Image 1 (cartoon, rainbow, N blue to C red):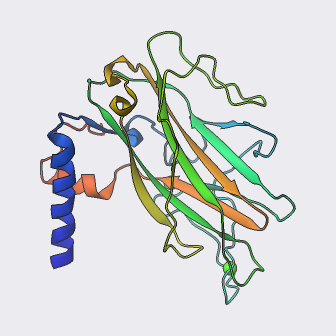
Image 2: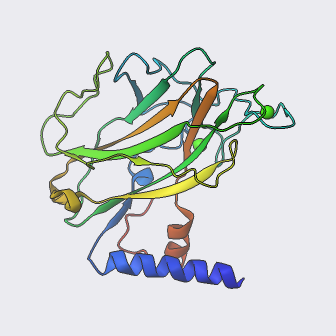
Length: 248
Ligand SMILES: [Ca+2]
Ligand SMILES: [Ca+2]
Protein backbone atom coordinates (compact mmCIF):
# COMPACT_ATOMS: atom_id res chain seq x y z
CA UNK A 1 0.00 0.00 0.00
CA UNK A 2 2.86 2.33 0.80
CA UNK A 3 4.24 2.18 -2.73
CA UNK A 4 0.78 2.76 -4.18
CA UNK A 5 0.39 5.76 -1.90
CA UNK A 6 3.71 7.19 -3.05
CA UNK A 7 2.71 6.53 -6.63
CA UNK A 8 -0.42 8.61 -6.16
CA UNK A 9 1.60 11.33 -4.44
CA UNK A 10 4.07 11.38 -7.32
CA UNK A 11 1.13 11.71 -9.69
CA UNK A 12 -0.22 14.64 -7.70
CA UNK A 13 3.14 16.37 -7.80
CA UNK A 14 3.33 15.85 -11.55
CA UNK A 15 -0.19 17.18 -11.99
CA UNK A 16 0.38 20.20 -9.77
CA UNK A 17 3.63 21.01 -11.54
CA UNK A 18 1.79 21.10 -14.83
CA UNK A 19 -1.20 22.74 -13.21
CA UNK A 20 0.73 25.67 -11.79
CA UNK A 21 1.66 26.67 -15.33
CA UNK A 22 -2.05 27.08 -16.01
CA UNK A 23 -2.09 24.18 -18.42
CA UNK A 24 -5.25 22.48 -19.51
CA UNK A 25 -4.50 18.82 -20.06
CA UNK A 26 -6.35 17.07 -22.84
CA UNK A 27 -6.08 13.36 -23.24
CA UNK A 28 -6.21 12.77 -27.00
CA UNK A 29 -8.20 9.61 -26.38
CA UNK A 30 -11.02 12.02 -25.53
CA UNK A 31 -10.62 13.67 -28.95
CA UNK A 32 -10.15 10.59 -31.14
CA UNK A 33 -13.23 8.47 -30.49
CA UNK A 34 -11.79 5.23 -31.86
CA UNK A 35 -8.24 5.73 -30.61
CA UNK A 36 -8.12 2.27 -29.02
CA UNK A 37 -9.96 0.53 -31.89
CA UNK A 38 -12.86 -0.26 -29.55
CA UNK A 39 -15.37 0.23 -32.37
CA UNK A 40 -14.07 -3.05 -33.73
CA UNK A 41 -12.78 -1.40 -36.88
CA UNK A 42 -9.98 0.95 -37.89
CA UNK A 43 -12.61 3.68 -38.33
CA UNK A 44 -11.02 7.09 -37.96
CA UNK A 45 -7.56 5.74 -38.67
CA UNK A 46 -5.81 5.96 -42.05
CA UNK A 47 -2.89 3.92 -43.34
CA UNK A 48 -0.27 6.23 -44.83
CA UNK A 49 2.62 5.29 -47.10
CA UNK A 50 5.63 7.51 -46.41
CA UNK A 51 7.72 5.12 -48.49
CA UNK A 52 7.53 1.69 -50.09
CA UNK A 53 8.68 -0.09 -46.91
CA UNK A 54 5.35 0.77 -45.26
CA UNK A 55 2.43 -1.63 -45.06
CA UNK A 56 -0.44 -0.74 -47.37
CA UNK A 57 -3.10 -2.03 -44.99
CA UNK A 58 -3.52 -2.93 -41.33
CA UNK A 59 -5.89 -5.29 -39.58
CA UNK A 60 -7.32 -5.59 -36.09
CA UNK A 61 -6.16 -8.37 -33.78
CA UNK A 62 -3.58 -9.81 -36.18
CA UNK A 63 -2.42 -13.29 -35.18
CA UNK A 64 1.02 -12.73 -33.65
CA UNK A 65 2.87 -15.50 -31.83
CA UNK A 66 5.84 -13.93 -30.04
CA UNK A 67 9.00 -16.01 -29.92
CA UNK A 68 9.67 -17.40 -26.46
CA UNK A 69 12.03 -20.02 -25.03
CA UNK A 70 9.30 -22.65 -24.60
CA UNK A 71 7.70 -21.92 -27.99
CA UNK A 72 4.29 -21.38 -26.48
CA UNK A 73 1.71 -20.96 -29.24
CA UNK A 74 -0.14 -18.21 -27.36
CA UNK A 75 -0.92 -15.24 -29.57
CA UNK A 76 -1.18 -11.60 -28.55
CA UNK A 77 -4.42 -10.17 -27.25
CA UNK A 78 -5.35 -6.55 -26.56
CA UNK A 79 -3.90 -5.16 -23.31
CA UNK A 80 -7.09 -3.26 -22.57
CA UNK A 81 -10.40 -3.52 -24.34
CA UNK A 82 -11.01 -5.92 -27.16
CA UNK A 83 -8.88 -4.80 -30.08
CA UNK A 84 -5.34 -3.87 -31.00
CA UNK A 85 -3.37 -3.67 -34.22
CA UNK A 86 0.13 -4.57 -35.23
CA UNK A 87 2.46 -5.66 -37.95
CA UNK A 88 4.59 -8.76 -38.45
CA UNK A 89 7.61 -8.91 -40.70
CA UNK A 90 7.68 -12.47 -42.01
CA UNK A 91 11.42 -12.39 -42.35
CA UNK A 92 11.92 -11.40 -45.93
CA UNK A 93 12.35 -7.67 -45.52
CA UNK A 94 15.02 -5.77 -43.67
CA UNK A 95 12.63 -2.99 -42.78
CA UNK A 96 8.84 -3.22 -42.72
CA UNK A 97 6.87 -0.40 -41.09
CA UNK A 98 3.38 0.98 -40.68
CA UNK A 99 2.03 4.48 -40.23
CA UNK A 100 -1.44 5.15 -38.90
CA UNK A 101 -2.83 8.68 -38.72
CA UNK A 102 -6.14 9.70 -37.24
CA UNK A 103 -8.62 11.84 -39.15
CA UNK A 104 -8.09 15.53 -38.36
CA UNK A 105 -10.67 16.34 -35.68
CA UNK A 106 -11.92 19.92 -35.05
CA UNK A 107 -10.90 21.22 -31.63
CA UNK A 108 -11.22 24.47 -29.72
CA UNK A 109 -8.86 24.62 -26.77
CA UNK A 110 -7.38 27.23 -24.46
CA UNK A 111 -3.96 28.80 -24.62
CA UNK A 112 -1.58 26.64 -22.62
CA UNK A 113 -3.30 23.36 -23.43
CA UNK A 114 -1.05 20.33 -23.53
CA UNK A 115 -1.98 17.01 -25.09
CA UNK A 116 -1.42 13.61 -23.54
CA UNK A 117 -1.16 10.33 -25.40
CA UNK A 118 -1.09 6.98 -23.65
CA UNK A 119 -0.09 4.02 -25.78
CA UNK A 120 0.35 0.35 -25.11
CA UNK A 121 3.11 -1.26 -27.13
CA UNK A 122 4.44 -4.77 -27.58
CA UNK A 123 7.41 -5.88 -29.59
CA UNK A 124 9.32 -9.06 -30.10
CA UNK A 125 10.64 -11.62 -32.48
CA UNK A 126 8.41 -14.11 -34.22
CA UNK A 127 8.44 -17.85 -33.69
CA UNK A 128 10.41 -20.05 -34.13
CA UNK A 129 13.19 -17.81 -32.81
CA UNK A 130 14.17 -18.82 -29.31
CA UNK A 131 16.37 -15.97 -28.15
CA UNK A 132 14.41 -12.89 -29.09
CA UNK A 133 16.27 -9.61 -29.10
CA UNK A 134 13.88 -7.36 -30.92
CA UNK A 135 14.83 -3.98 -32.32
CA UNK A 136 11.30 -3.07 -33.37
CA UNK A 137 9.98 0.24 -32.08
CA UNK A 138 6.88 2.39 -31.88
CA UNK A 139 6.75 6.14 -32.42
CA UNK A 140 4.00 8.62 -31.61
CA UNK A 141 3.39 12.20 -32.61
CA UNK A 142 0.59 14.75 -32.26
CA UNK A 143 0.09 17.60 -34.71
CA UNK A 144 -2.44 20.16 -35.80
CA UNK A 145 -3.64 22.82 -38.14
CA UNK A 146 -4.89 26.36 -37.70
CA UNK A 147 -8.33 27.42 -38.99
CA UNK A 148 -9.20 26.68 -42.59
CA UNK A 149 -10.38 23.80 -44.70
CA UNK A 150 -10.71 20.35 -43.15
CA UNK A 151 -7.31 18.64 -43.62
CA UNK A 152 -7.32 15.16 -45.12
CA UNK A 153 -4.44 12.68 -45.35
CA UNK A 154 -3.15 11.78 -48.81
CA UNK A 155 -3.03 8.02 -48.89
CA UNK A 156 -0.96 7.47 -52.01
CA UNK A 157 2.82 7.07 -51.74
CA UNK A 158 4.19 10.01 -49.75
CA UNK A 159 3.72 11.54 -46.33
CA UNK A 160 1.42 14.46 -47.01
CA UNK A 161 -1.88 16.00 -46.05
CA UNK A 162 -4.16 18.21 -48.13
CA UNK A 163 -2.91 21.12 -46.02
CA UNK A 164 0.55 21.75 -44.63
CA UNK A 165 0.67 20.86 -40.94
CA UNK A 166 0.88 24.03 -38.83
CA UNK A 167 2.05 22.53 -35.56
CA UNK A 168 3.99 19.35 -34.96
CA UNK A 169 6.18 18.29 -32.08
CA UNK A 170 9.71 18.67 -33.51
CA UNK A 171 10.54 15.03 -32.90
CA UNK A 172 8.26 12.05 -32.55
CA UNK A 173 8.36 10.22 -29.24
CA UNK A 174 9.40 6.59 -29.04
CA UNK A 175 8.16 4.02 -26.57
CA UNK A 176 10.94 3.09 -24.17
CA UNK A 177 11.23 -0.68 -24.22
CA UNK A 178 14.19 -0.76 -21.83
CA UNK A 179 13.59 -3.50 -19.30
CA UNK A 180 10.43 -4.68 -21.04
CA UNK A 181 10.54 -8.36 -21.98
CA UNK A 182 9.89 -9.10 -25.63
CA UNK A 183 6.29 -10.27 -25.95
CA UNK A 184 5.05 -8.19 -23.00
CA UNK A 185 2.86 -5.13 -23.27
CA UNK A 186 4.18 -1.89 -21.83
CA UNK A 187 2.40 1.44 -21.59
CA UNK A 188 3.74 4.94 -21.72
CA UNK A 189 2.18 8.40 -21.53
CA UNK A 190 3.66 11.17 -23.65
CA UNK A 191 3.07 14.90 -23.32
CA UNK A 192 2.90 17.19 -26.34
CA UNK A 193 3.01 20.91 -25.55
CA UNK A 194 2.45 23.31 -28.46
CA UNK A 195 3.98 26.13 -26.42
CA UNK A 196 7.40 24.49 -26.41
CA UNK A 197 7.53 24.93 -30.17
CA UNK A 198 6.14 28.45 -30.01
CA UNK A 199 2.57 27.57 -30.94
CA UNK A 200 -0.42 28.99 -29.07
CA UNK A 201 -2.69 25.97 -28.56
CA UNK A 202 -5.78 28.15 -28.97
CA UNK A 203 -4.87 28.68 -32.64
CA UNK A 204 -4.93 24.94 -33.34
CA UNK A 205 -8.32 24.12 -34.83
CA UNK A 206 -7.75 20.57 -36.06
CA UNK A 207 -5.84 17.83 -34.29
CA UNK A 208 -4.42 14.54 -35.50
CA UNK A 209 -1.86 12.03 -34.32
CA UNK A 210 0.35 9.40 -35.86
CA UNK A 211 1.55 6.01 -34.76
CA UNK A 212 4.53 4.55 -36.60
CA UNK A 213 5.66 0.99 -36.03
CA UNK A 214 9.08 -0.12 -37.25
CA UNK A 215 9.98 -3.78 -37.58
CA UNK A 216 12.83 -5.73 -39.05
CA UNK A 217 13.28 -9.27 -40.29
CA UNK A 218 11.38 -11.84 -38.16
CA UNK A 219 10.00 -9.20 -35.80
CA UNK A 220 6.64 -7.66 -34.98
CA UNK A 221 5.34 -4.56 -33.25
CA UNK A 222 1.82 -4.09 -31.88
CA UNK A 223 -0.08 -1.13 -30.44
CA UNK A 224 -3.21 -0.20 -28.56
CA UNK A 225 -4.49 2.87 -26.78
CA UNK A 226 -6.70 3.11 -23.74
CA UNK A 227 -9.51 5.58 -23.08
CA UNK A 228 -8.14 6.93 -19.82
CA UNK A 229 -4.61 7.02 -18.36
CA UNK A 230 -4.78 5.30 -14.99
CA UNK A 231 -2.85 8.00 -13.14
CA UNK A 232 -5.15 10.74 -14.36
CA UNK A 233 -8.15 8.56 -13.62
CA UNK A 234 -7.01 8.52 -9.99
CA UNK A 235 -6.69 12.29 -10.02
CA UNK A 236 -10.12 12.61 -11.54
CA UNK A 237 -11.52 10.41 -8.79
CA UNK A 238 -9.84 12.70 -6.29
CA UNK A 239 -11.55 15.67 -7.95
CA UNK A 240 -8.21 17.24 -8.84
CA UNK A 241 -8.37 16.97 -12.60
CA UNK A 242 -11.12 19.53 -13.07
CA UNK A 243 -9.24 21.56 -15.71
CA UNK A 244 -8.89 18.49 -17.82
CA UNK A 245 -11.44 17.91 -20.51
CA UNK A 246 -13.60 15.02 -19.41
CA UNK A 247 -14.88 12.17 -21.49
CA UNK A 248 -18.59 12.61 -22.15
CA1 LIG B 1 5.43 -18.16 -28.75
CA1 LIG C 1 -8.10 -1.61 -27.76
